[in-house]
Structures are given as structure tokens and as C-alpha cells.
Length: 125
Image 1 (cartoon, rainbow, N blue to C red):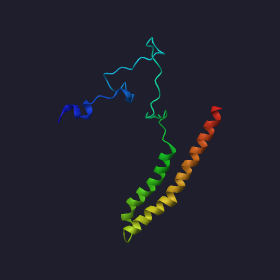
Image 2: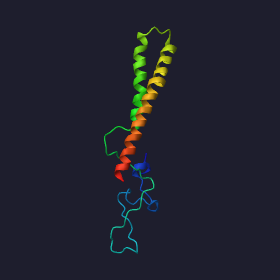
Image 3: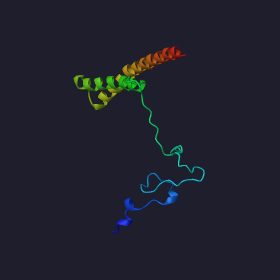
Image 4: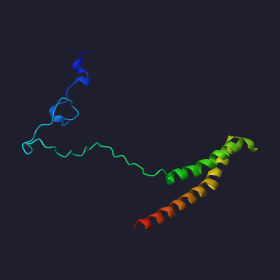
């Protein structure tokens, strides 16, 4: 196989607009900027935006998932200790625990989060 046919050895065409990624090519000087001063970089249309959380406190989604998962795991662990007939009964116990224990806990977590954010919003004004 010829090494010039390999994708990493091919040169980028000048019209591709990738002057920085081509390696050996430099950006052409324009007639409007003869001094060679730095031009502001155009935004990359394929750029990825990364949002960073400043605080380490868990989000509402974490608390809701935890409120739903903990009763399910406890019911799953307790299922062999109870006189259940089959796996369907154990699954039913897990679902009942999630609905009757996890959902109220998740609602309380959402209420506490809403009250915290409401109080925080008034303080910033």
C-alpha cells in the first residue's frame, strides 16, 4: 500500500478552511490586514459548550433518584425474608415501596428544593 494513500498522510486542500489543523500551512494574509495583526477567531460551528457547576451540593435529580432507589433496594433486600410465593410477588413489593415510600420522599425533596431556591432568589435581588 502506498503511504500517500493513507488518510493521515494526505494533505488538506487549501480551500477546506482548516489552516490551523493542517499543520504546515499558515493562514493567508488578507489585503485588509497587511500588518499581520491578530484577527479575532471566528466561532467554531462544531464547538462544544461545557457547563461547570460551581457548588458541590447535589442537584434535585440526585435527591429524587435517591428517594426512589433506596426504598426499592430495601424492599428487594427484605423480599427473601418475607413469606412471598414467587418473583412476581417480590417485584410487586418493590414497586409498592417505590410508589408509597419513594414518591412521597421525592415530593418532599422537590418541595424543599423549591423553597430553598425561592428564598435564594429573593436574597439576590
